[in-house]
Image 1 (tube, rainbow, N blue to C red):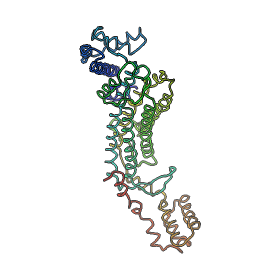
Image 2: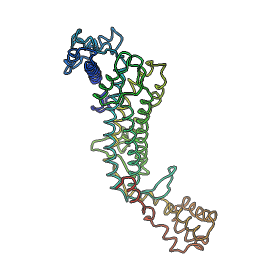
Image 3: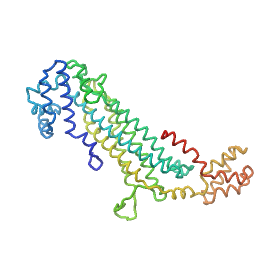
Image 4: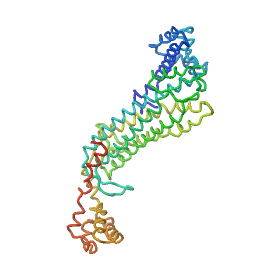
Length: 434
């Protein structure tokens, strides 16, 4: 992933240095386990740990791989250069490359998941704070982009909080599913390595032994992991699209923070564009682009092929680095987001009183008018407001059919905005469980 959309902690997980360090730990812990079992001499296992403070030379490993055309063999050759060829002769005993590659990949994914979980916690804190801040800030709810009925800005933030809270659970579950390792040998039968070696290595790396592997860890786990990343990305876009709509000039109910010295357009100095949330929409697309390849990786030939390998070398870093950046960016947007309550009320009253149509409809039916007639009475007055920008309440008061069923006081009562916010506290209790 390009540096523009990367953060150092997540990038470090996918660096060659980190990868080779994990490979080393897998091999060293496996040697310890084999020494405990009496398979290899203890002194050989201890010799491998001589490299525990070594910074493996990535350029040297690449140089060896250019000849061997095999990355794990290149690494093992380089390790022997530090440990000594005689001392290192039992390294990788009974193991296959995928034991190292797959176990390492899952370690990296679990570490990435830990960062994503922390990112989501930060976003949830920002959403909760803004939800309570604007719990009673009235705004118009929209369906199909059209004014529907009143809601509050706090409920909007609370809705996004609930969605991201579900995503937090999904990320934790995805982390648990991907946290397995396999040290089971060429086709997963443990023919040349004791299963207790796998148990030892996994315990040291914070993984669970894969119940049954072939030469690889089953890729349905990875498909589920990346699918969750795609869902989280879609939720990010869901929030971003709402903010982008709110920042439109003719809406302007909320906006990204615009810092001193920031420029919105190279041509039009007046512009304040929602560049961060538009960027988040694009980043979400990139994270989701990893989902289908991850699912296609599930079907491998027999006990193993490498059709998944090139895919994972790209989607592992790219999807996690991008999502990490997107979550952090969205948290910043929410934290500093500008809210314009006056514009919200002005927008709601653009067609005066029109958003109360359902209350009048229900009142008419409760007063004995058939639903068909009640709908007709309300709609014909509503259309006048659409066409002539008149006042909906005044139109109703002038309609003989309406006033035959409802008194002026009863009509007036149907325009109380507080009616629509009476259950906000109940919703907040459900969402925030407080």
